[in-house]
Length: 453
Image (cartoon, rainbow, N blue to C red):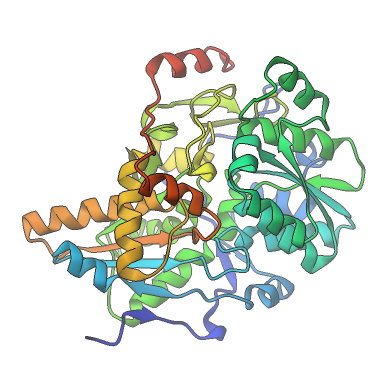
């Protein structure tokens, strides 16, 4: 066996800049619009939600942005993260393909989410903000923000999608250990939440609803701001430490990917891995196929429309040009709670619309079957979200077995599943079912999307 089953970087090789894909794209992405005037949103329009530094990053056309030293100091708790070659999985699949995975489950929260939580909290603390609100699905983002707030001394209030709040109680416990205050969403705390519970006391919630509650609370207080774990440009920017490290690690062993696959819900994990490789592809230095992988129950790219829509259910956010299933869409309570979002990051939507990346949707039973194979070979139990990328990598590896092609496959294992074992228990007992979104459900939600001239 060669010496690159586990590829490590030295601490001094942590990237010191984030990469912004916008200036390298053949066309600029469409602007976000003010929901009242329908004019391009200005920095002032975001001032009630975000600190100045994050607003500048959201609108930036600079290719590289320096990572503050205080952020790097916290990153060093777990970064650089390891890159593994899945040799045992390759052997099981009897494939000539090489499968590499960038493992982000080594972070304190067990996922990639602290890569953006830490800088978001840092910039808020710099401007004197004392409290942050947010939403979370499965709980990876909420726990990451609670961890980051603990590092810089800020309060943290979190609205967790009710279906996940009930199904993943230990995520809530993790948030509370780090000082977070957690509510099921819809909640009795906000007027909007109470209105939904009055209609359905057992409402499963959605990320769009949780965003509405968190945003509403943030704008009502002068010393409170809102933090988002995916979708927006500055969030994807922070996550590019994943791809930048992976580029360095693959270069150490003389590899370049032929295929890159990443699970895609709001887009931060996918963008974080893929955008540095997309830069290299656009510059002609490599030519990987880059593929988004989403659940069949929430197929935003593969079945959604590229439209201006709200990022939340109540219509409080700016309008974003993105692939959407409609802001009123309530996804089925699948186990991959982090992928249950009605929209897709505008930047991911834009590169997909330009034909620079592909997208597929995979049902959850196939994803969990692949995850169990992976765990028995590689030893890591994946979170439900990256099981989609694992399933896609397995599909590609099996195709290589049939064709005899020796492709190099890269993916991001964006978190571990130690707090998601109830999902695996349901799969192992044969009780998990596949859910596929109907055209009728999409049409009903899309009917409420604004029609712009």
